[in-house]
Picture: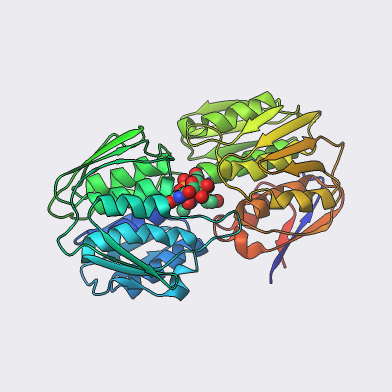
Length: 417
Ligand code: EPZ
């Protein structure tokens, strides 16, 4: 199992381009099963989660080739509707193939994605929505067998929670359904808008993506298109955390400022100064951060749950106390026990984490338990006195492309063992 070794007390400097968004590339690759012809997806990050989606596409009979950050995908040859357990288990987000395969093939058979490191990850909202579109779903022995013998029919669907995955699943199932689908209380994340842009460029008729109500007019079929994935706002937030925890000034290239509103605001409260120019964002951190007092994770455009762990790492060396309220996932503080091993003062109780800032962290051997927790521990290692070894690098590679190269280019002393 590979580890990362980080030398502490690092100052970062320079500029780095932010990778394409994992959580945009994944649903867009699933959407390809609905298209005819060859789509070209630019700025597609090289991640294990993305590789898993490419494997699923190939299993289904599609052609999916990567060269650098460009992926060519053509699903004219799709001849299956089942996704084997082994492939489903590689990444939870493969549930988003359900709506796309069901719409494209009239049937979809796949195993329950199952929980993951950060929570149970139920899919009840997905299944209830697909049934409203006419799907007949059998659940047995951990498998889902979904059919739409007479095709899918548009419906009005009100979501009990603005679930990102469920909103994407509905968009994928509804864009070639007969009639109109209205999604009420839809997720508003930028990745939803990016998926809608890809589908609309392929001929879909999706209106209101990014708002709370999305209307989808079903069309006969979809063509294909060229599409550039939006930048990854969570990777950007993670790099800002790395700069903040080390009192550094760095420049992020290729960001979309409007996607980072809540993140920038939180770091400004901590004393960071931001300046933006076109698609660049420069962050300059103080020697010692001020505590942010309260950080609540919320659906977009609120503070993103995926940035909680990296921001919490930075708060461990801030001056004062920060209270985190994790409102989205039920088990997303696994990184705190490891940060305490590095000298942080953190108490967690359910959705709450109370962080008392300390003067400094100390290098230690720590173990990541999930993707964003791994990034948080690396950020902490950059700041700690001495050397830190972070185990569980496989989690990091699910969402961060060449993270050690990115940090090395900013002056960090980090090596993958
Ligand atoms: C997406 O997960 C992201 N993953 C997550 O990023 C992100 O944290 C999350 O959205 C919230 O922004 C991808 O896009 C691949 P949800 P998703 O459905 O779709 C509950 C990362 O680190 N829920 O909005 O699974 C669920 O349990 C990952 O990149 C149900 O109860 O998130 C959770 O508590 C982690 N029933 C809440 O809603 C359902 O049917 C939010 O989940 C679906 C969800």
